[in-house]
Image (cartoon, rainbow over all chains, first blue to last red):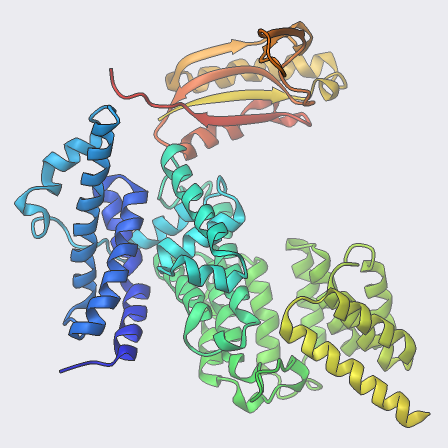
Length: 426
Length: 121
């Protein structure tokens, strides 16, 4: 029976999400070489796609992938050992690994199977280690834990592919040479390190957030949700992990309403709330209740609580703005960034009117002058106050600074509408 | 794994620290070395101030090496000493470095570098 290309591609994507990082972690344990483990899995994925498209799908895709990756790892180790001998280097631990079980008949069946789910989270902590630059953490996580190709990562972050490849190579090299452990840190370091991990997962989601093609159930957004689920399953006693999972689930629940039929961005006040996924919203609420049990609030739980207020409101106008303002007031204690204060000002406009909100936004202007949403928010408030000329000037400034196509479209539409109105008034 | 810990500071900022406060932290540094005694391969050395440094530099254009007064870099940060430790991984080295008593002073830093492993002899 022959399978379509799409079947093979879809199954591979699914298998990658579920299995690839386990296989990386397993091979790392076996070979002690992160580079070899990761490269072997990448090569196995390429050959999997080729072979599954040609021969149809295997019965147990995960096992197929593990076996293929093991063979690649042996090849890679052999190649390197040979290279080393040619270079006159010392026969080190690589050779003893080669002479040991790796090369023996027990290699394919006498050894334990891929690491269990728990092994992927230690890998994630290693990839998100603070000794790596933030961009490197993100790229390495998507490559080694999620199993994305360098090309896909590059496309998601609008970065040239060689740049991403170089970040990954450098990060892998540093993990090996600097002795970065692939392990969940002890209780003393865990809160800070978990925050680093959750930040990377959140950044991965954000990259998908503004991409209309990623708004569906597949893609990078779903990968990020999957990562958050993985962390929760492994560290179920960490409220911030549940907070992030709740936040991402709420964002996903609104994903379908975020773009209209033409792929244009629809902002929250204008979204068709009947298109929200109410089952997902109910799940997210359960995650947040779970998080609240520990009474240890944090920025992800607070962001999620704000998103939950929006999710439970029947309309923009009927939103519980006082509740949202109160949550923002707590959130600024955990994250005092001016962007959070700007978001708070939007809620303040709904609760206390545009005049007071404009006052707050103007106070942030010197710190956010290069941020298009500061100017877009000012424009909206000025328009409500009837100061149309100033509003148009602010929208123009926002358009000048905006880089994302979806943002630029909205701003251009606003400017066009303002021009029409002023032409009608004249 | 073996790492070098490089203890650095900003001499211009160090000057502002009162002598008795410096002595206090110096005592804590002794305690720190005692606490981590077992991890040291070589407790290293505390260096004389940067004003005592002399540097031999590669010549800019031909000729032999050039001897110059002062440290090798113009940076404000100076390496004040170093030690070599043998610990399981970077996290263990980071845990030690985080407790370096002089980190209470502004401008102080500890750089951690793995040592090149030339194989077991």
